[in-house]
Length: 428
Ligand SMILES: [Zn+2]
Image 1 (cartoon, rainbow, N blue to C red):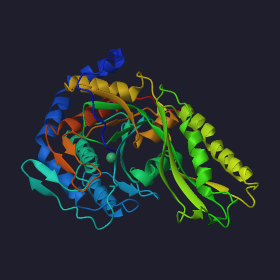
Image 2 (cartoon, helix red, strand yellow):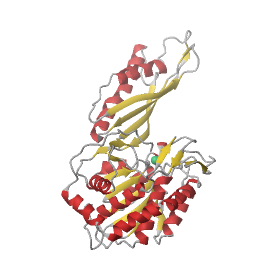
Image 3 (tube, rainbow, N blue to C red):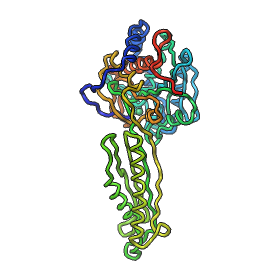
């Protein structure tokens, strides 16, 4: 994901729930936890070395295999068994004492860059430059650091932590890794955290859902003079876009749409036989997205009918409509009291990390939120720029805060044997 700019002012929210704060306080009073947080800071260079090494293994969209293998190998170095599922996700479970909840700690393997992109990392001053150096190899490195620390300090959790390197988070990947995990893997998941983006001051409380269509209109087409009287694919699309443009949506939850691209026709003196347009619809509310889709889609059929009737045609011999779905990211909102959000905010408080952003975005956590699994996305620490651009850079400023936050949030959620009970509840 690419980060939204955040406000400079801390977000005001009711205090973290008592039982969550109690778990945070109990954990923070443990010598082993204090030592672990120090170890994460001490290992800053190791985390960065993992990040650089993983960046230099290409992971183009739909071909994350090499980085997947390398990430799996690194998880296994810490004694876990890593598997790669049929979709391409890397999975490695660190078991708790038994009967506890399962928390997924995920980061995405894929980059937006095509195969053959030069991914060699270059350092200038304190900045590291390479396509994908931050998004999301920082997240993968943060996961490895959490695991390194759990192993070094031999921390026995109550619940399980399932480490996941996911495929297909970006663009046309359409969250295929995370969709597989929740819809097809059969794995029981009680909570989900994605480490994506670097900003530790923001917590994602909800998921922006989106649905995208490529709308095709096709007809006979012909000469603008000789064949005058035929319906036009471009005129039909114009009618449709005028209707789309007039649709009203809710401000809360924010619901949006746009006709993002359009192309069609052949020459100025031809009645267009083809026109296509891409429609993007988004909402912070799951129902609102479905409602918007239900309003939008019939407008295209109406427009085609009007254009055909204007010239005495039907869809049989005139303009035909095809709606091609090209993306669906499920979305949803979560209440502030949701365990994963509470744990993250509790951990931030303990680590003196102010909350500047409490926002919605579209990441791997979308699928979880949509399914009602408590979920969020946390930052991996440090600074970044030019994500999704070959000029992408990463600067390790207070970088350890990312793995510290993921580590402490996870412990609050899954509990530590003999110290705290899991905050995360087992779902059926
Ligand atoms: Zn990302």
